[in-house]
Image (tube, rainbow, N blue to C red):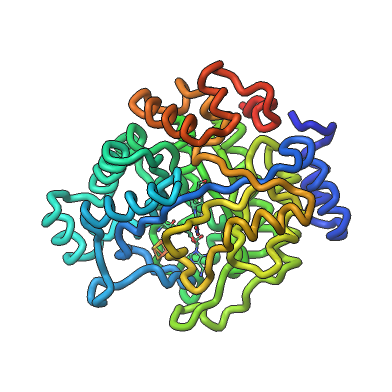
Length: 394
Ligand SMILES: O=c1nc2n(C[C@H](O)[C@H](O)[C@H](O)CO)c3cc(O)ccc3cc-2c(=O)[nH]1
Ligand SMILES: C[C@H]1O[C@@H](n2cnc3c(N)ncnc32)[C@H](O)[C@@H]1O
Ligand code: SF4
């Protein structure tokens, strides 16, 4: 149920054709009703567990071929050292981001994993999540791309939340010369299956669109509807990220145009109109000088911001200083507030969405956090907070 009486069909048509100012005004209305004037972020440490990957996305600088001197798999000692540094700086989330299934493509990846005692990257990832839970107070979030049923099962007990950008639903982009050529994990059907499987297993989940990689406006709308449909079946989508493609030297798409600010504002507003209101809408603060304008298009979240690690995916773009971001949010009439990697709605339904083995860590973190939301854990309900007043669409 939306807070405002609307017809989803009419809204979709509106999103595709309305002038940008009225589209943004409509999106703001929906955001204000659900999320108020609070805009959130997650203080996190980013751990790039491996940069080897069986895919070769045309926009990616993160991926390294095994023949590169930079190709690596972080050791448990390195993971723990980064985690401890994050913990000291007050981080609450540890984001594992990594290449997809490199062991299925490269001997070097198989050998590297074997030296660590594993045959599958996902098993090593699960063990590193367990290590973080054991040795620190950080909550692990994993962004490991497409996941099969058994991979979700090994990760669920040790990851507080998971994510995978849908990126796009465009199959055209898997053709030769396009962004996702020769990327088995970027075939839209595989991405959609991961959204469905994590829904079936009730994993608090992040997904999103990568804007400006060759997709059409209609394909963006179709992707938003696909996300909304999977959420309507399972209620597990915590947040949707609208991320703008960044051009960098050395990538296949180095001459591909970046999306404009208007492109971003229109897509963010369309997302806010199409998606169920309880899905948090996120856009990164470090990939546009005009990110504050995103607030006028309906976002309520900035995603992860790290006081200790760079954005390994967009390393040329520094994180904003949290105090400076708070000041510019305030200038725009918003209050910046820290949040956990698990949103209040999911904490309130912990028995459904969170493995019992994670409850202690969640309690510790929510209390340490000192957020008013910690009360959700004690009273078992968050009905007084705007984020949780709407039940997940089922
Ligand atoms: O700093 C980043 N954080 C990314 N995040 C993390 C995000 O900003 C938040 O920290 C977490 O989702 C927790 O809410 C992702 C998480 C996912 O599950 C899937 C994709 C992304 C993508 C990015 C990204 O490109 N850069
Ligand atoms: C972790 C996420 O980072 C995004 N990603 C990867 N490369 C780029 C880039 N050049 N610009 C912006 N986002 C990118 C993808 O959407 C991926 O899923
Ligand atoms: S974006 Fe992810 S899947 Fe694509 S090449 Fe980079 S690491 Fe691999």
